[in-house]
Amino acid sequence: MYKGIVLYDFLLVRGGAERLTLTLLKDLPGVDLCIGFRDPHAFSEADIAGITTRDLGAETTLPVWRSLKVMRAFAHQTQFLNGYDWALFSGTHAPLAVHNHTSGQNYYYCHTLPRFVYDLKDYYLQRYPLALRPALLALIAYVKPRYEQAIARMDILIANSETVRNRLRRYLNRDAVVINPPCEIDYFQWQGQGDYYLSTARLEPFKRVDLLIKAFKQIPDQRLIITSGGSQFSALRRLAGGASNIIFTGWLGDAALCQLIGNAIATLYVAKDEDFGMSPVESMAAGKPVIGVAEGGLLETVLNGETGLLLPLDLTAEGITEAVRTLNASRALAMRSACELHARRFSRAIFLEKMRSILPANSLLTNP
Image (cartoon, rainbow, N blue to C red):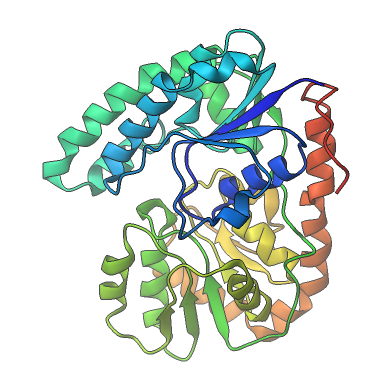
């Protein structure tokens, strides 16, 4: 049997990419994991139980320095890779280790390009404090050539969506096989219908949660629960200004998150040109329609008018307010069956079947 290893940036938040990494490893018996670091508060020992894990110990709380430190760790601390027949890289930092794996196949599962380097460069620069912009520009200058050299060394590229595939073609002149990430569709279940709408997006600028807050401040009779964390947590709480209909929970465990999704009226996910977006799929698996934007990965996951509402690209708080009024409790309930059925296109079984067709034949993925 071929010996393989999966390399991923770090286990810091319980996002879609992190879930995919652990899901894949649970179905790849004997395959090892290499990470830049693991936050034990977000991912306990139980999450990686039974997985041989190489932790490079590159943890730091400073975002820009974190990227540099993790990239350098993958580039300089992974000489052990030639002991493996194949390596599957995921994330934007881990691929820098590819030059240390010269004796076997190299695969890259691309969730996203480093968007602050490519399509969202100007977006990030405009929102960075003036004093920090030189640091961001220095990071871009460091990342871009190294990332591009790493991707050039990959034998096979896998994109999580057609949106990401198109970005790989545009910016790196590489094509990719599209394999959508898996959703644990049997875990996310309809549990009822409460009196609130839900946002599960990370609190980062390009997720545009600020527009959700502005919208719900205009409709105080509708409740919004924001269940996540991120660099904008404090700023967004200030923006909410103590509005009684807007609630922040911070990061929650899987069970609590599942309960909130399962009892919502609908979810809102308005990230800017999202790569794929696992949150909308999880919402639909629980029978909850999605209010999103007609761009990026949501064009591939949400059926406008059937499993949610997709808003125009010129997104405004007023547009969100109107969508909430339109997607009321009764209309959301009418979409339940369509949501649950559509979510099955993104099942773990389908994901594993497609991955079997890519990875070496002797790397047997177990049946789900």
